[in-house]
Length: 152
Image 1 (tube, rainbow, N blue to C red):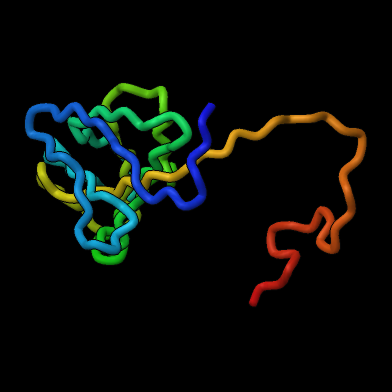
Image 2 (cartoon, rainbow, N blue to C red; image 1 turned 120 degrees about the vertical axis):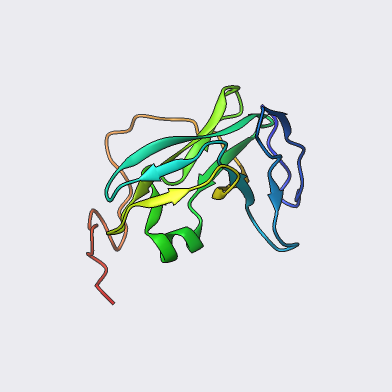
């Protein structure tokens, strides 16, 4: 499988754009993520989650993945986030991109079709070989986790 060069900064994504959908785009020259928009009106009660359609199907090149991430503005203003963040779009997936939104706020939130609901970040993927061993090498941290390095 081809692995992208460390200095590679662009790749091409091919999209099928369904009815009512918008081709993703970067909001600014320095943006890491492309905006994904809803193709449906959505109402989310507090703690409710929904799979929100984007009307997009995408071909992610081999050696890359698409990461669907929440939008910080929706999180701050409305308490909207994603249940599985980041969501992963594998290079061999060809179905519609959906975003699992959740309302973590106290009020019901209404989002209109065409509204930006998430962002898509394209990242290189490194495939790992797995090897079973009897013992792992020691480190200073060892098996400590979940706050073992301190709280500040």
